Image 1 (tube, rainbow, N blue to C red):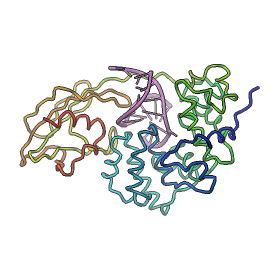
Image 2 (cartoon, rainbow, N blue to C red):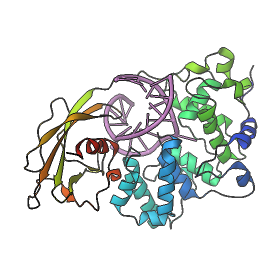
Image 3 (cartoon, rainbow, N blue to C red):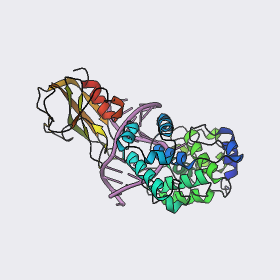
Length: 348
DNA sequence: CAATCGTGGCC
DNA sequence: TGGCCAAGATT
């Protein structure tokens, strides 16, 4: 009978191999008494939802330099936060980030609650993030269950139950391994293990501190776990984006509604996105079609965006959207799909 | 509760 | 190229 893996063995590994990250207090400093800033822990966890560490780093630096405290962030203008988030994706996170900051500033006197149950009530904070903030920021013995931990548990216990069905069971596995001492470092250690050793493809089992306790290693099934439900294939949708440039260089843009795809972000006025998009120019003009189209893949569909451009006189009012002066317009305030359309149409 | 919600890197 | 994957939450 194989023994359960011990948290201590992982912590020893973590003390040696913890990756340096802008939001992380390294294990040595932590054990010397340095405590993490809950605001930075929360900020990083929101940004890291379904997003790679590499993609998050520069955004985290920008946000925390521009808004050093949750009170600063609470006082920011919506459009500034959305623009700063542009390119990172899943824009509901940015809207909820700001909502949450305002709740913390107004209802909690600027300090984050410690309890998992209280954190769970905050906008944009779900079971994972509540456990992450509670454990990492306050060293509470909560169990984090993210994609890394799911993979590690599936392998340690050689459980072939497909996700997401297996989630509750995997949480029980993870909970049974969570230690009362250094739970914050432990939470980060399991995730680091999943990110660097117990990887989705070609896991480096030879370097794993838990190898001798891993059922999948013993059975040779590590690489095929965790099992997942088959995914649907993505349909392709078509659309038209209208890039109107006024003779002074101002661009015609539109703020998208808060709900739905790219909610709250700036974008080019456009058609619907579907099988046969209907023409919907936002202003009367001589529209020209660019030769290439913008291709972009969202979570659940492919988009092929036809870009049309026009030059319009100063005195012509648009039916939709607002002109943004050239000294105010920033390409990088746009979500990626809109940047692609801009890159195709900016020269015309 | 299954569907929705971005993007970039990797193979 | 296209599917997979990443420190998930919301409805």
